[in-house]
Length: 69
Image (cartoon, rainbow, N blue to C red):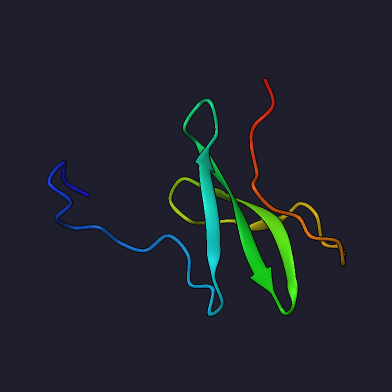
């Protein structure tokens, strides 16, 4: 994407919703909250949107991801 916002492309294609994205300290990954079925889960994706990984995968509510110090 250009500095003026031209050329923006979506990083995810989840048919539900993705929330609360947060960049990793080194800028290489993004943690986000994703609705999967009826559950909110924490996923981590590469900065280009590739390699989504579910880090929580349980029935509890998992939201508002953040990176540790």
